[in-house]
Length: 605
Image (cartoon, one colour):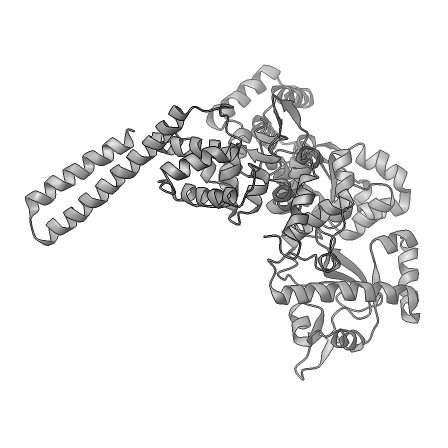
């Protein structure tokens, strides 16, 4: 549970924190009654279903089912391990933790080998940066970076380094630190030949550390200074480093992204660094690969607006089209920044400066639909009538996908003016397309929610009376230990839903230890995430402030009746099995009919 942190310290930090303040740093919350509501950061939605209770210090999304306390929230939103979530809050509150805790800040879920590899990356990042600034060989690399326009401050901020052109320098360094060479080969830090000799994989290169979202170096990108091939060399994918799951600079840009409520998406790390130095601090990069759905959904958690700023050449424009489509599917407002003369962002900044980049590229970015209308023209010769009609039909299919009528009207007007067509004709065509394929956004939002948490769709169904009785009973038990005592005396653990049995067993023990009713504290003691979500959902359920003994006993009676009926069915099923074994076919048929009737009764109650 609390790992290396004393339990009382974990409780102190949690009780000193207001979950509304923490969640409010990520989600725009509005108070409605006693709770706060906002758009869920964990799945796409257009109507707020994400609720935060200041009284109970918990959160719950009625759409995707996620819930928990302040630690759970930070672990979900930031990808923290438990220790990291506690440490994060402790630092904000200026609460001291034991020294051994401050040294051990890695999630316990990682394998032992991955922990070793992660540590090796931290040591090498420091070594490479030190060699850049303090070695004779590093001077050439340092001058190269200055000539490229990187300031000393930027070089330090991004811990850019240099690996000397020596096969065994880094090998010796790692061995002295206690790292086994073969493990370092698997990690992509060293290479080996047929004779079994080891060498630094990145030797003779400028080194760019690639960090995860927690700021830990998990890979490297190397750029050759001379004629060495390949010119660019990246770490291979490992358990720690998967290109499709990480965004370059996300750890440093996160606060600016939150503040500005938009993100600028680049292709490569050099573009990101150059843009950041030019004053674009909300910049992240996909490390030269196409953006993945994982990366797109990560950005959607933080912002509603994304500006794609890829290279201005043909491959860059094509990549921007694909990235824009994916970002649109997440529900983000998507824009594309166009860079003239086929330049890449870094080239433009070096040639024209940061101010012009901000004003002429970022600030003049166009909507994805405007970009797409221009992009699609590359496939058609608009001087030919057939191509012109085909192009218009293709654009209308895209316009038909737009949710907002004002957007559709705007782009239809643009098409009507450009091709001297009737606006009414274009509207009729769009309506015809929509009748066949209506706009998908709402369906996509729902689908994403269902894909994430299939169980949420089950909860929307009408539940049997006994199931509702169990849920109501637990909701009241979470509010009052005296109610839990009454239920324990009358019912014990005889709940019919297995998750409910586990929850009440934990709850009885929790109260027997002398703890008060505190849902935020109780869920922290549960290890199963599914149980945590269920407890939070029940705690957020609308129930009366007080409940009569009669209502409690009605719930208990309904639960007991269900248990009795299930016992009867089990007994009948045993009888049926015995009758079939003895070839008493008539008796078996009679028993089977009784079972069917019993199950019908259960289904209707």
